Amino acid sequence: MFDRHRIIVTPIAHPEFNCLRITPNVYTTLAEVDRFADVMEDVLRKGLPTS
Image 1 (cartoon, one colour):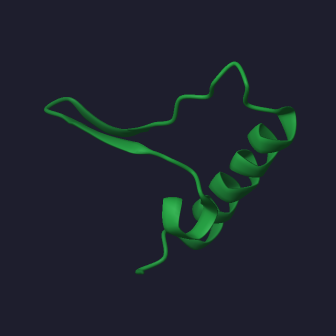
Image 2: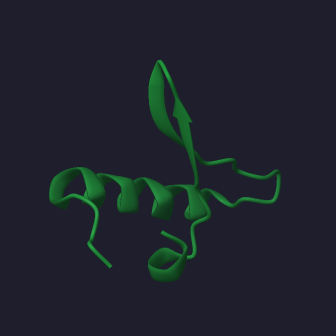
């Protein structure tokens, strides 16, 4: 996500669940939140790229 979109994510692997941690900052703009949502919708439609 960082190389392609400059979005920092941290994978969380727990015995009961797997997820991604994305932590916005007080300085995160609404445009950045919207861009993140667009990227996530694209990933949901197409899946994660292989590289």
